[in-house]
Length: 290
View (cartoon, rainbow, N blue to C red):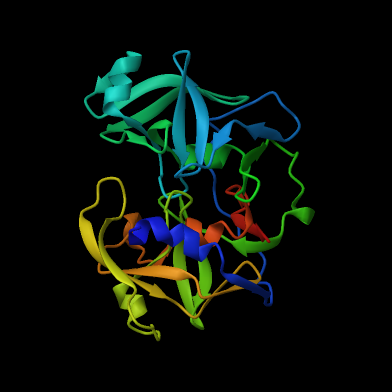
């Protein structure tokens, strides 16, 4: 079994103990809602947790699987799927169509076209749903029970959501403050990342144990491959919880994210799956509940 296959299996067993909660969230300007619904109560979406966090969407009457991705600032669609659907393409890199995700409807969604199609033990996944979806509603991802819930308008009650952690946005992508091996780290909260990554600049300042493996990993759908080495870090603190011994890749990729903000790493599924994660772009806060 290769390192990628073992990452989720090993990291799901990280030990959890409590620590003090971080400070209250800040505010962020939010664009007008794209995905709207007439529902007034929380809505559970049709989803799958095979390979990635997937949601069922409808375009031109066809059901399609998309990865739910906080690390994407738009909505990505595989170019072959766009042609199969007969979508209007105002230029070679974009298509426009209405889209439904459960009870949520969006008119004239602008899809960015690329070669994306994947298949995870069955489901064909044709794209990524990013910031426009999260800006529209509060979203809860329950990894243990494999469910995704959206909260329209004022139906969200934060009192039971967990520990509030401020979000900081760069090009509509959310970053959170964590502590890795006792050191503060600004990390992209990425629901589509299979694992957690530390960039080499940050990793040079912490004590890493012996390497567990080495892979060439592509970060982002159009990024170039970067050498990444797998380590077990001593502890990672997030959302009032300390995870002991999670795995993380140290990547040689040192490029900034959009807007020039240098992150220290990427917080991925092997860490996020220890929580019920609620993401509220409007109030710039994520809630972590164990």
